[in-house]
Length: 339
Image (cartoon, rainbow, N blue to C red; front, top):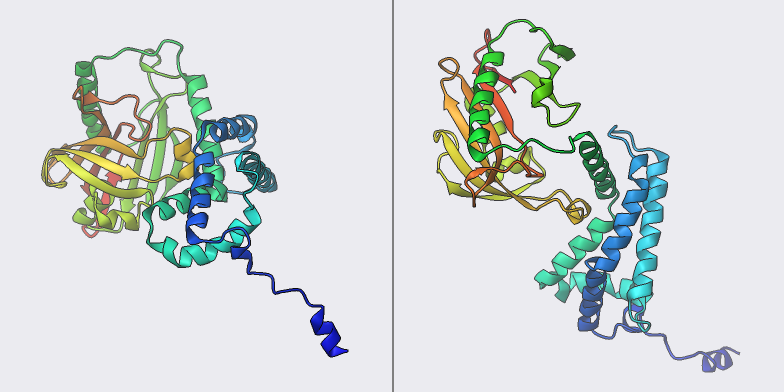
């Protein structure tokens, strides 16, 4: 009986990764086909429509609601349907997924194109990146809705003067005691205080634009505080997860030079960059040492238009920021930063 049973057994079925994907090259080409679809106008049109329909459901709170997970599931199913519709009919996703792990552990590990493709595919299905994409679009809408229909036109010279004025204002506020008229305290803790005040109506670029004054005490010395806010280099990755690398375009010493121009490469996730956020920015950092008092540093950081040599007011990554770093009034081992 046993021999009769064995004689009826069909030949062994080849492993899944070899049923349709008979070579590593086929797996690699399959990966590139999927990448091409994800980067195509067809996918971007579908993704934009999905975001346009659902971004209003997201809020800027840290809590992840059940609705977010359900929308992410719908998004993932939509990607699967789109791939199925646009891949060649003979392409087997089941075979591809079965063969992919062995390929990535083998020859695919050495190919740069493989790494880029896998990073892209992982990014489009990642929930945190999905949520960031939704919130980014919602923020863009809110900013557009509150912007004036005819934004004020400022010359490059006017922008430079404005930066200087803001440096002076920042320095003045950092040594000013009490809360001046018009300022509202929105956070007050032992080591942190935040206040806001509406920008003068004639100066606003949006109806809700306001000045923010933020002061905090850090448990680090002066050099370490400069590191935290002004340094660009490998150590920055310890506290800035979006930072990738940078190139110094002008100025060499990030601490001593009063003006430094940098090109900074960043990574905010595949989906957010698909929404149009650049992967690099050019920023200029302007510093005033021993200002407004000896031992204090006041600085401004902004996007910079290298071609026209003026502030880049349209930069999506580098908004104008000002701050003052000063010794703690009673504890020399600490620093105080105002911005």
